[in-house]
Length: 227
Image (cartoon, rainbow, N blue to C red; front, side, top):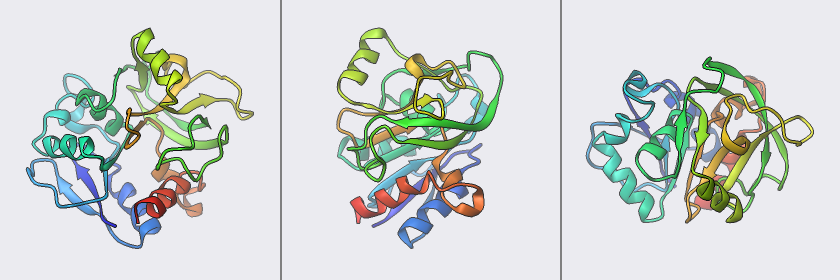
């Protein structure tokens, strides 16, 4: 299988994502600059974390209009797996691949710490290695992570099992989210289940030497499913 990491000006987690992918898949991903207009045949596309275009205008707004995103959208609509992490999640909402919007954190402060997440859906290709309701610990690092959507959209996401991860306490019970996200939502899937956007950074806990392996399950699962 082949993966690609899209690199935008201001990306700062593209190399982290590449290392996590290579560890799981024993093959380095393609690093694709955002101004490219063609994307080789790949099985997985990752939109990494960072601050594309310095979050100018709105986080992810300019990156969503980069030339390569036409290809990313087309591949996603054709069923290719797309994972957007932090700024990548912002880009996915700005490009229309996921519903809702990502606003400034409720406290108006940058948040950088490890948080507890509850696995809400373990039937997707991204989450199949996790147990339903499993509590995992994954770091966040963002100023704009406050996921918002209309009540009817939130009801649909929850009713159709499209919420992948939710912020919780260490026991899996509802807790304060680090950013004020609606219904403590930390990650969502598209209707087809091939696009996942999440604010926490699984690539930062994909190796025990980094302090944790809760993110490794995601990349190991993708390697297995997409092989």
